[in-house]
Length: 304
Image 1 (cartoon, rainbow, N blue to C red):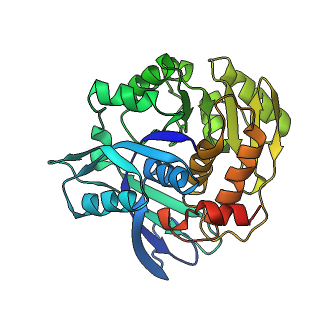
Image 2: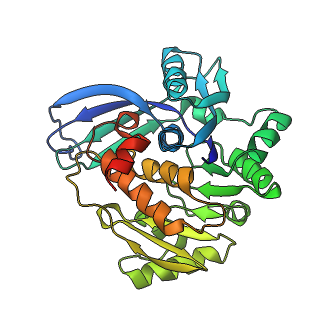
Image 3: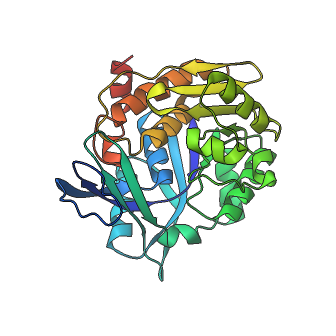
């Protein structure tokens, strides 16, 4: 069982289902509206925990009802929330997720307390990271905090996983130098490298470009096509399961959390771990919502 620490965002999601996403200036009727736990960081943490990992979370919420609810949801899944701060003068992060009948979505995020994430006291942090197998982060929190945490992880021999989302072409070199595994989607890898990735040859070229910064493994998620991995020990495309997707929200987050739960630090089971993560994501896209859609270990194993 891997020990995973997640540094990331915590949001209360409002999901609105509709026949088709509105065009600029257009008003459409919704079919359903509901709230659920979200935030890329929280989604990844819950995915890791439900996939069998022991998970600790570093983040922040506001001192409001949304914050209390989201902390309770993380606790119910067994996640250690001792690294989450409750901030008096900040609102808990939130997101509005619009989903159409073919599973495509548009998301608007209000960061709130996520922008004020800071690391717990250094002794707690160093102890926590030293006792982890993987440290995961995304770009929905303070970038300087991520760099600081990744440095500590690397100094202590802990593998780091960076999900560069939302995408940016201004990732500090210092952060990439302290990143072991980079997991972007197609759009994000194009933003990072400036290269198109329509073919496997394109994917290899982009991955090799990223490895120049010291990254050890690149895994590019390709949606319904599956994922492409590249490391010094091998590369290839791993096909996704063929399912009827109804909501792609949290699919990538589920992939990352599930991967971290089972991957060995020496990457010796990289391919089988990607396959496991793909099975988890395939379940997620067949359900609505972010955290409610993330499967448990027994469900993932039942599909294999």
